[in-house]
Length: 394
Image (cartoon, rainbow, N blue to C red):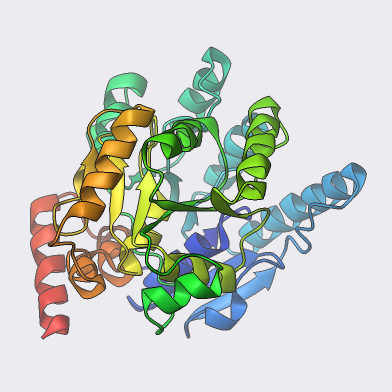
């Protein structure tokens, strides 16, 4: 029975890395976490051993320094894996180039004879749905012992589009992002602290500014909802779309139409913007599952989301509304109709709808597999997880 696991994030989202590591540790596993300077070491639970293999993640480093750091990191990771060949490995993030990290390195990990699991966040990388990338991932998905997915939609697409056997796919629901604590002040005070009007409703768009997230449509929707204050917290990429959005966000911010937090959003700022928001808007064109969704619900903020991917499996009348028409007018109608409601859910009511999605519960299928048990009876697992949550809640 395995009680140890090597958790590899490749620098993927510090909050996600933290939550998965702690969720495994809370289930009695000893976790070795090779991380970086961005790893939230101070919040790791007992049972998680941190090894800083990747070091600095400063984006201002010269390219040669980044390449040198990546090469050193992957060599050290391979040596760590070789020193513990019987320790199961769970890879929770992917980095480029995928043909090297996902295919070559994946084959080397499997050659040690260990159990190897890969988390599939999205079928293909965002905004890179090319035939070449599809061929690379067709190879990647055949290497691990198990593919871990957060939604039933992802599971079905892996079987349909990539021919993956059902018994190779393990459904592990995305847990809540509880790394950031909500401010105790009321919404009006939080709005004033950000320079917003305490009497006007405030909506939030959070995260990287990317085409698939539909922020261009949300900005167009501002003309249809002049009484709504919009907070945007996230950085723009350096591509053409990112530069275009940067110019637009700058203009809207200068005109006082939005409150924009540009660049990397630290945890204090994250807590500030979620405390001031009464609705998080997710006008995504496509997604499998979203950490922003789980951040919002963990903090008790309702969402307005499109009917796509894993949103359909989490959003319900107790924690949000659906955007029925993905257009500027459709987004505005949904947001305005929500703010006109007299029965909007409280923060406590929102959190109550997703209490079963804390990582200590959602990790159950993975923990069973790591311990050598059969985790394929999903109905029984769901019942057991629900019973554990209800027992703890009482």
